[in-house]
Length: 124
Image (cartoon, rainbow, N blue to C red; front, side, top):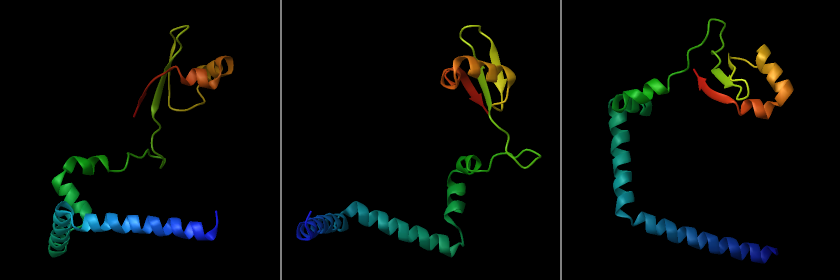
């Protein structure tokens, strides 16, 4: 692509973006949202509150879900419990790591992808 055609293409994109911006600036909904945002930020400054404080105040459940996960005594978080069920034998294996003896044997015999497809559920 020549430099001139690239310039003309960018010029056209710029004009289109400017048209879109002009439409947005004249949109009453955008004006109302910007006014709300400004008033909310002013209120937050007045009461010395952060966005996180407001979110916690309005939706306490979201603050709980954003809390860090429980950490084990060693400093690492506890691994998730994975439950596998061999469809051929019906045998069930519950493990928090990949070094479980039966699970390793299954992976050696059937392959990693096949055994991973036997995953029944994952628990915290």
